[in-house]
Image (tube, rainbow, N blue to C red; front, side):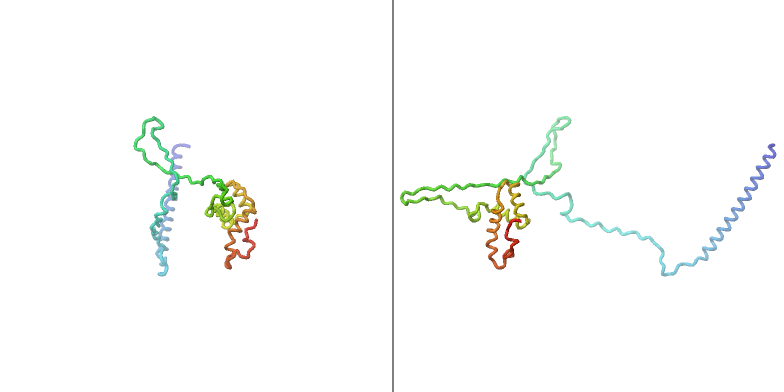
Length: 220
C-alpha cells in the first residue's frame, strides 16, 4: 500500500472516531438534563420523618475505683522478713551506691504441722512414819486436760472442730491426727472424747443434739 492510501485510511478512521465521540457527548448531555429534571420533581419527605443525623456519642466519665482496690494485690502483714542486699556490681565488681528497696515479693505458706506434745506428769509419793500413810505430791492439770482423760484442751478443741464444723468422719479424723500430727489414737477414744464434750449440752432440753443418734459422735 502506498503512503497516500495509508494516510487516507487513517484520516477516515479518525473522522469516524470523532463522530462517535460527538454522539457520546450528546447522549451524556441528554442524560444529565433528564437527571436534573427528575431531581426537581422529587417530593420532600413528610415533616414527621427526621433526617438521619449522626449524633456524637457522649463519653461518660470513667468510674473511679475505690482506694482500697487500686494498686497491686493486697500484701499481708509479714511474720518474718528476709532482706536480699547487693553490695558490688555483678559485672565490674565496683561498690554500688544509692542502695534502696527496689521491690517486695511475698511468699505465703503454712508452717510444718507440729507433732503432738506429750507431757508426762510424774507424781511422786512418800511414806509418813508418823501417820502411817503414803502421800502423793499435789498436781493440778484441770487447765490442761478435760476430766480424767489424756487428751489435752487444745487437741480436744481440734478434734471437736474437725468433727462438728468440717464434718470429718471419725476414721478420717483418726487418720488425720496420725498423718499430720503423729498422734496414734483409736476410734473409741475419739468417740469417748466427743461424747464427753457433748454431755453437758445433751442434758439441756433445747440442745439440738438431744435425742438425735446421728449427732452422738459414733464412727462414720
